[in-house]
Length: 225
Image (cartoon, rainbow, N blue to C red; front, side, top):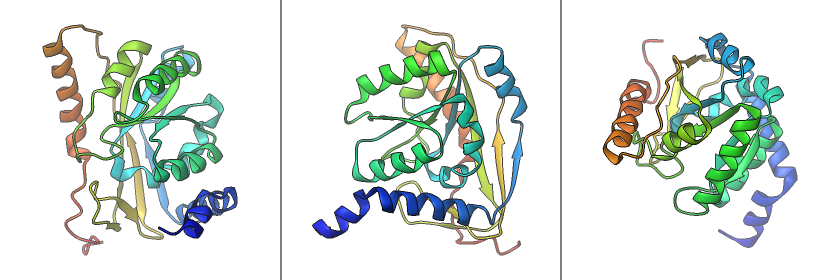
């Protein structure tokens, strides 16, 4: 990648343009949100909530997640170049960003997320990001839920017409004017444990809960729509 292109991608003006483009593009979706009230009630009662999803589905959640900005939620994003762009867009949506991942800066980022979740009561987490493998829940979500005494609320996004990219996550891009559903699952509570076997059981449990929400994207569009 040339220095000129890198400078464009790093420019605040480009980040603002991208954010507004995403809002306009996503504004064409016929969006439906399901089962939102339960976890918002938990926050109002003082219970920390960790919203969790697969990497492939985060795009369609950007616009509707602005409605949660009043909670000052946090999201951990990798220190990569792509992560810098995503972080800039997330901040304009009203989300706080903590930079780090399992491969780079993970421990201090996790500590920052714990502190923020304890105070603000809401955070988001990409379960298999930033580099996969697809559909594998990494340990960070369970560690974060344990440390902050948070409930985990899985969510998924589906669209009746979408493109799926040839990327590690089979990234999903709903087509304009698609019916898009954002569904929140029931809260999950994981009892803190120091037993590696019990910890792995919890991680596998979350993975099993999330597995049905993973979209394979074998077809570019749903021909039956």
